[in-house]
Image (tube, rainbow, N blue to C red; front, top):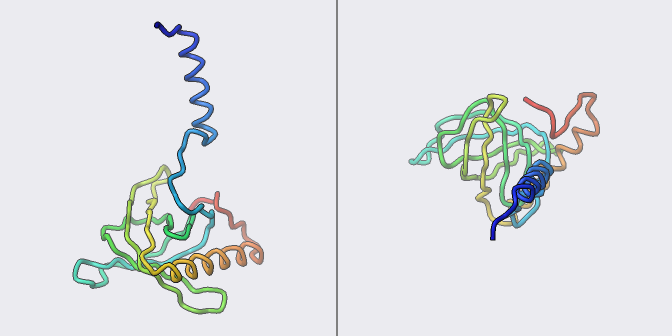
Amino acid sequence: MEIRRPAVKKFKEIKRFADSAGMGKIERRKHPRVQIYDPISYVGIGSQGIHVGQNIGVARDVSLHGIKIESACSIDTQHIVLTFVDLEQQFNEIPGKVIYSRRNESGNYDIGISLQGKERENIEFTKKLVQHYHYNKQNSHLRISPTSQL
């Protein structure tokens, strides 16, 4: 059976529309992502457990098992510790494993991190980070939005 050209052209148009609307993407995550825009520090951990570098980035989205940050620098280690100060001025940290670190269209790096804490630690860390973002968004005179760029 031969497919007529108009049918192929129509299918490509529908697929292009679905892809541009995000309909073509299959969500593989167990937990939904929450879009945020909040500063976060990280320390790279070398193979011997030694701190090999420290930097700051912006948390772009977070779920119960992972976080995506944007940073001006790439991460060259596989293991890191993420840190931030919450609304009660308490220091929060959680270990993470770098899944990817790649340059984005703005010249910065998108870094995908799997949270490596215990389930309860992951929940507390993400909850406090999201609360911190929403508090700052409400009380800041600056525009703080997940669509903002570094």
